[in-house]
Image 1 (cartoon, one colour):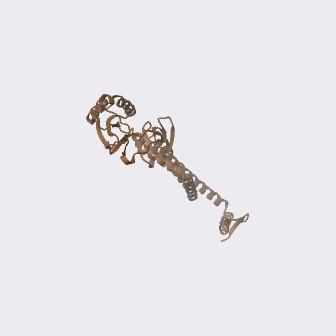
Image 2: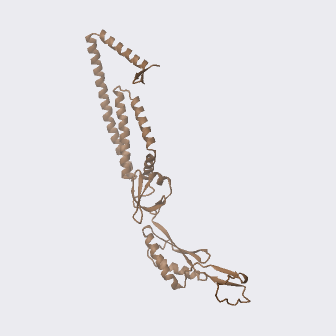
Image 3: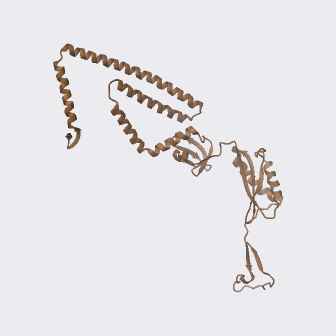
Amino acid sequence: MFFVQINGENIIPKDSVEKVTEVAAEKLAQLKNMSVEDLLSMAGSWMVDLVVKILIALLIYFIGRWFVRRIVRVMQRVCERREVDLSLQLFFKRVIEVVLYVGIVLTVIGVLGINTTSLVAMFASASLAVGMALSGTMQNFAGGVMIMMLRPYRIGDYVEAQGYDGVIKEVRLFNTVITTYDNKTIYIPNNMISSGIIKNYSQEPMRRVDWNITISYGDDVAVARRALLAIMQSDPRVKRDPAPTVYLTSLGDSAVNVSARGWVDTADYWSTFFDLNERIYRELPGYGINFPFPQLQVHFDADERPAPAKGADVPERPSTAASDSVKR
């Protein structure tokens, strides 16, 4: 195959140029042999055909516009019934309009007799290139669409995601904005947050508050239980149903571990937790319950007692003592 060269580069196949030249020469020869009446008849036929195509194209365009508007209205009604986020509604509207109008334009161009194959191929190639270049951004976009459709959280919810916890301030198509309790603004990509674990503490109307405390060995567990129940039941924010409970959860190395649990409204969780924390610390010793310090008992045999420092008085070693107990 031969090519037409421009500046030493092969641009167009030479045989294609020759075919086009031959066809053009044949058409010119036919026009030379035609009479004026034939030329006028051909021109009139061509004009009529063009007018008919234009009318059909306009009819398709206006019918298509009406069809697009109907589809958009139906989509908006469905989104309103399902309470879809407004930003997502606008996005769906724009996508539907663009896709349908592109289809209408290609149909109109085809009716006018213009070959649309090359246009479609060029559009597909451009879309593929843009998609590959923006793969990460498109993943965040897809995550944003999924979040807005499935709605695992809403604006104002207290959530924990990707190692951050705070209140949802804004849900965007590419990221979610969280405001922490120390007033930091966190932007989390939607691709990460949609594919990770999300803890939504605001989705349920009630939450359980746990106060895990330790009491000394020898303290009366029954007294500690009555005291903790009295403290929780005296607070109006703690629910009566389910009733608060107190459990002995484990026996530690130097203390007995007790867990007091009560249910509160989600909005009252932190205020109840902090207030009753302080009350437990202040009121529990009044019931004879002590908060122990960590203790370590070290036992020395009589022959393994540490050597005293120089100049220190050495007490007499009791002959009957097998071991001493030192508390720290």
